[in-house]
Amino acid sequence: MFEAGRELDFGAVRFDEATVSRYLVAVLDEAMAELNGAGEGAFVPPLAIAAQFSKGVSEMDLPLEALHTGQELEFLKPVAVGSEVQCSGRIVSNRQRGEIILVQLEFETRDAEGDVVMSGKTTLLLPAEASR
Amino acid sequence: MSEQRIGSALPLELPAVAKELTQENIERYGRASGDINPLHMKPDVAASSRFEGTIAHGMLVLAFISEAMTKQFGVEWLRSGRLQVKMRNVAKPGDTVTAGGTLKSIDERDGDFQAAYAVEARNQQGEVLISGDAVVRVPK
Image (cartoon, rainbow over all chains, first blue to last red):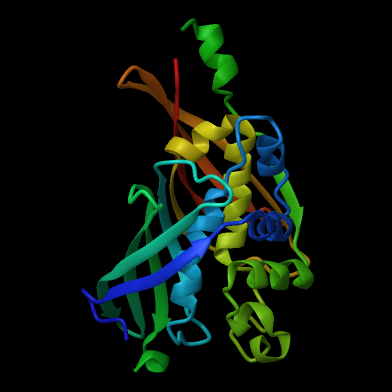
């Protein structure tokens, strides 16, 4: 399931107003709401975009006690509310150390123009026994 | 840019963001993000895990750090932000999480300032949940 080099396609998501609003309520984020009301335009919170990747990873039949232990994110372009983005990635490495497996994945998210709006790396720690 | 101007644009401390986590918040985040792992969403299932109950999504706690950066830097954070963090401890329902950061360095790059902050999120006991670095470009 986590073989290094495996390509991952997490599909497309349209961040319409309702989707962004649900996310902002869920993360109790007041700063994005303030920014979006300030007249510079309405933008998707960057962590909402990154969540598309973590959702995809969570659907990979992870063992219950899989832990998300590291995260790198780079934001390259603000994404306007109403935009559709496409997320893809790959498994970079998969190393067993005793009773645990460290898996590193990377992803990038592109907008409709094909521009990369975000990239990132995620590290997961999986119990080796449950991952066999 | 004068030192005073740098100081006002780049504070030594980020504005703190404090949130109380409830099981309802965690489930709301799970539904909004689509990450519905039972370790977050199902108290009965999570009770048999080594955490003996549900835990918050790491990306939910990380969103509090991102909120602190958005509060300070607005759209520049969305345009040029970088985060590199480790998730060190889990947050659980009932925890109050406080996120913030401290200025580490200021560099000049391509005609702009680049500010690096040591960021973290802690629970009410002062345990570090997430720590790492956040970098943002600030136009001169």
